[in-house]
Length: 630
Image (cartoon, rainbow, N blue to C red):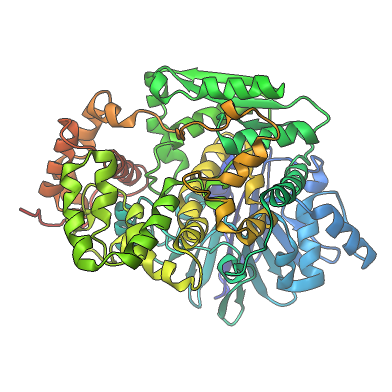
């Protein structure tokens, strides 16, 4: 787990080694253990190291092969590197050390770009192929590790783990991509391949990009989950399917326990993290250390559930208890580590628990991915019901029933209002709105893209032959999860020099999840049915079936209380107008409605706050103004 950076001037411009060092060290927190760089005239590779496997000098990057014709920098881990190393040794390759990154480099030498499909892991890698005069960039199948690049045709390419090293480069193009910001304000994230800046892209998960000396830029998918998913499912009984899943998850956990430094786990007491800890206990010959966070506000405190699970499993659990004021103290730090605006406010406790865990371990296993792979969100239940509703209820009757939403409590009103969408795919797509209580598109100045429900429906409808709930899972795994949950966890853990590993996102586990019949995941009104059934082999039922809580602080009330002065300062009508993304007067009315307790627009307000903080931290304070809407 590290940070990488590199540049190649195709026009022959020589690279300034001092500029490389500045960019590299702008992400020192991602790799506090060591630093290295290689400058070869018009090409440079640089690396910040968090030492996890092979702590010796032989693991320092950039790494080269035997004759110096290949060099690489890698962020992440290849978990199945040991059997691959044996294959490569048998083929005549010679290794300097024992790192997985060196295996990646020799695998490329042996198999070319086809090597990436052989890896089981999380990685962002760059390979400079001196003999062929080409640069290869690759990202892991599910996008756990980030990789950005900016290509100016015929001139140069920059790449890095995050945007900070790119922004530190002298000729980086800092023009904001307004379309990307509009997407962020509509759905809460910037969808890949876009980034916050024009001409700067995120490499898509499961893709490899090759740039040749003649300027040809080619991008190919080496792993495509939607293409692997078939409507024809394995006909397995629940017990047989559960046993197979148990073995696949045991394998995934075992691979992720390989480390030369201490390994622990995040434990919330929910199904996913509890199952991972239970399997760690089975696989490890050392005591398992887990970490939880507790809030002073009992409504949002999950720590008692985590402690009950830890006691039942016989593992040591450390709990960090935080007051609202302590958690709010992290707000000013967010922009330091999140170099794109971030609308997921659970990043605050994630950052806090990451710092807490780093005191004792250097690697943690997490339960990320369980909801997406095994249908844990209530939105998937709604999608299953909506598919039947749209199939059998005529449009005219749907329209009349939709009008009843005004008579319902807020908890149900939003879903009923969504039935006014023209089809079931857009019904689910409406869950992707940042604010389901209003149409944010109407607040935007000259919106440059469709509303999120239409954009997501295009993708959902391309997954032919699958039930809507399964299409929704695929969408979340390949879109929103990558740019929200995985983005959040990567930045929060790496801010503290901590590596996070996700067994439930092992590519073999993910593929198996989509080989299962949908009823093994959504059984009547029970979400994540097979995971809960498997967890029942390790924990009593009283610790499994409880209401899903979520890892979030009481931000709604903070915005009306402790954060209110910050809201009024950063989101004044004058500032909103100066930025030019939204109609200032109309947006200010929405903000005031929340502050006065008349409505709940928590996610939108946090998204606007994060956007303004990002501007203050990274950009000039003034951009094109937009007239206020009446």
